[in-house]
Length: 501
Picture 1 (tube, one colour):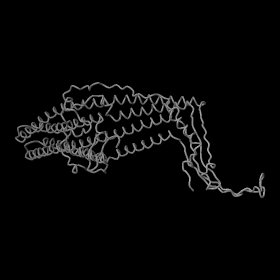
Picture 2: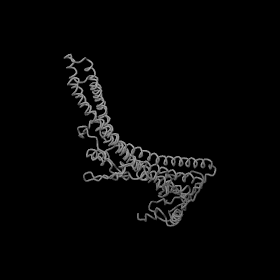
Picture 3: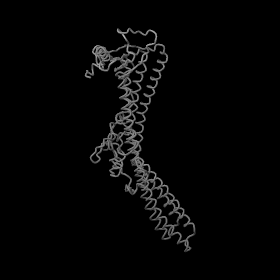
Picture 4: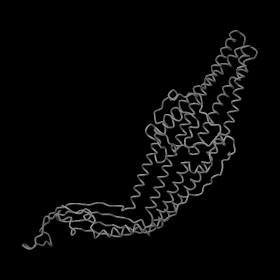
């Protein structure tokens, strides 16, 4: 059987109706609802501590900010995390999901329902029923008729009021928000990796300092015990020395717990089961060194770089479009419905123009009795818009606060570390001299007891102060939204860590 497939599905005499429908759709340009404009958000011109010497150094690199620490281990950890972290992969799948859902929404611009139909039926009619007509020799009905049919049925609501175009705006903005959420996950993960690594190094540094002091205190305890056995001093010296030994020894398990827990957290970030990474990474007692001064741009950069701020703004844009979708229910829904096809008793006659059939039916529906509910729905969507607008403005303020807090910690952290370094130097010299004097028998043990405990405390505080400088720099770059647009090579493949990944 030979026939034109286009003529079979769409007969020439109904094509002009379809053309008219497309022309109507092409001239539909009205979109009810508000036109979205990004709301105003208060942003400062300069940082509060803009003139501080620590904030007037070389321009900071917010894209690959962890390289400021000049740690190959940290660089490798960040690269591995961006490739293997499961939370980041989950966020990536949300982008795939949002992209697919946007495609579904776009499809509503075209006929919302369509189906190709076809069938075959064979019947047996009774010749004993009422109104049965037969004229032997002239007309005898076929008591076993067959019927072949094929056709296309469709229903299309025209987007006169922008209902579907507003829905596409919502889907576009929601997709943008999902991409920004992915970037935000990357920013948080990189900061957490750097923080966990710094915590491991800090715990190792504090552990080694405590171990060194413990060795000194144990030697002093041995000397005090020997003097006690010789009857030179009372048992008080040995008891005080033993107290220092016990207190310092008690610090070591706490630091080991901190180091191992930081290692476990780092493993999860790397997408692997928890293990002790110290030997694998070659973790040393050297805390990653921060630059002594950096310049961090201007607060307005936050609106561009912070993914959470971009996400809040895109969610607001999506909600604005939802108002238009809700308002479209005030107006009639205009649609075209119809079907075209061919029907014949013989399959061979199915392609004949005489076998064609079709109907097109313009329709409208207007929910005039539901205006109260429609109005309330518009009010609800509008209230949601205002709520998200306030959330967006709050996110801008919070971003500035986080950046300011981190700058304060970074700038003054060096001053605190320098002061503690001076205190440690003095305490170290004092302990050495007091140990020598005690061994010579020129002083009692009370001064040694106090200064040994003080040295442990001062060295531990210095290690924590140096760690706080690194942590404040990490917090600063996290506040700036650093790292989501980083690119790095991995063998033959280039991993681009951006929203489109």
